[in-house]
Image 1 (spheres, rainbow, N blue to C red):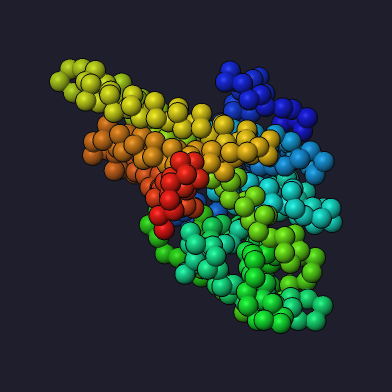
Image 2: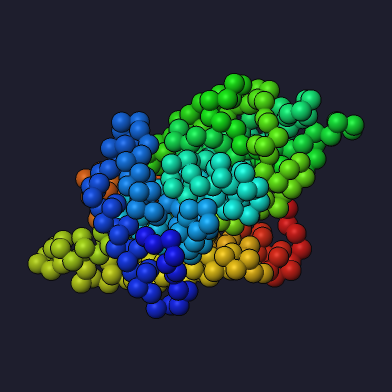
Length: 393
């Protein structure tokens, strides 16, 4: 992928977009149908696929060209993510490293920090996880208790995070904490710091789960971890804006990934319905099979349009990016759940059999109705901010 290429926001796919999709599809398909499941069963992250996508220049599609990326913004990264997911690729680190950490560093890091971290993210040789959620602070980020306090010329990090993705692949974690005031002792606004995964005082434990993909979820513990000043992003008081510049990209890229999952489910279901014959005709001839798939296809295409709009608004730093990002994530998760459910139903008993690869898609689709922000909290957001209704929580 050329660093100088550009992705048109026209509804007619540009040549660059077509070329990117074909290249990403070719890379992901080369790893075979069971690659993600095999990685999961071996307890390994999908490093080989990541490295292949990185070598081709795709994992840094959103990073500015001056820092080694593709310069395509979130619109470009969404193309990569959607196509990878539609091809069966497992690319969760596109969310936490490329989209979230990459967006924060591109907008808020110093040039020295960008040289140290952003170039590696763009190349895919450095991966950062992102840690905000805590056991008692999920949607309510005002209740974060992980703290930074000054000790001489550096800082000390203490606290706990949970449901943190992809730490096993990461070189470091971008942690959201709150600065403790020297005078009052109170916790202030959120701030951001980068912590190496092998830093003294940093430990982690995996969260046991059924199949969601090869990447693990973790609970993280920080016991007086030393943080040098050059590891703070945005300084002591600039973290709040930076945090929000991670949440919109998170919603957008997850919408793109789950749109890809939905497309994969529908492709598999349509192919099966055309081939599976009962009572002498393919089951696709029955409206009871065809209509749920057609309805899901409409929903997925509408979600893809909303995702495209959200990416365009974010890249332009335009008003309405937050609203569109939440809408895109909501629409994509709902559409994907309907698509995967229809695909399972189309396959009958085979929809549960691992051989057909449909039930594996359900885990991610269902998760995205909960994480990283639940469907209910998005509806609260839209009611309050878009419709100007009274706050309900």
